[in-house]
Image (cartoon, rainbow, N blue to C red):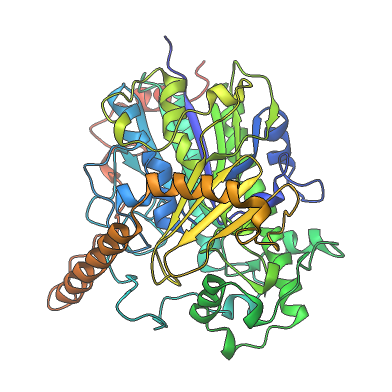
Length: 501
């Protein structure tokens, strides 16, 4: 079997409800719309955990956070957990990442042979929540509503600088792969940090959404007391009482968010253009780590199981599968088994500890009879939360809160909790039984608390005295680039040209 090249585009905090069948019609995203027309689109796809590091560790490994132990944005991703990069590399692939993956800990590769950029977030334990102190805000790194009140236009920002670099390095790598110096199949992951807040966009993209009809959420802000207990914890963690959020703030934030989708569309288009110009064939995958509430119900960012936060886009361009729209609920945790299936790689050795499953049968029309599972045990939680999504239903459980049961077909905005409705007693009991079989929340809570306590000790110790950071430092061998005196100029010029005469 010839193993196909694989190009993965990952973006950060992209709300999947904006991708009901590829990008919504009103989004200015021509490159993503072109990709959607060539792809299998998964309408109801979800994150494994609605936060960056745990969602990404699950995406890379096919394991839920209770297995990876990446509970939050400062939990170590252990080096003995196989990722899709390990599986593919073991099977003969060259594996490369340009951009963000939010690895925490001293292993900053996780099966990748090459990383082209550093990460945008810290690799140490400094962002560790603390269940021993419920309600305490860790002000210097917790989200606050300043991202909303500070929304607007800028020509450069911390995140734009990063994603400009991600795209530049990815394009260079695509051209380098075309030169054919390495005959192995390749997997290149290009991972951007937009449209993650802060909600700041370049004017050329901002101007695309002048007069946009979608600048206000469908469900306006609710009174604090009308929210469920976890939503209240999110409001408190986001320091909402110290901000006065106006309608103009909401419109500017959403406008900048949409503008940054268009910015990403340009960057992704540049990478795909390089692929096309070099006549390289590749399976193309587009997805996000989690979503963004974008002001729905008054909530922003992620950290919950509501659709805006938990639902993500997934699109796959496959050579032997016709473009189509799949409504079966799936997860980004299914990506690693899917990539192995595509490349003909067995996961049998680790399959008993894998939570995801290949999406290829569903892309070809099979019906799913297993639920999609989600977990959350990071900031704004005081105990782990878990969720099951199956058919029309979503079931949420937390030891601290009443159960939630939503019928997403009848109630897409999740406004009517049916958990206490006698008419749905059997549905509730069915999901409750599945949750009991899958999770022991007492043990889960104990594991999270143990992890947090250990990390606080280690972090404070390592910040005393000499400090050796874990942040990834990209290696550039200047003596092997361009022209040097140990090289033959004629060979250099010939080898680095594509196409060659």
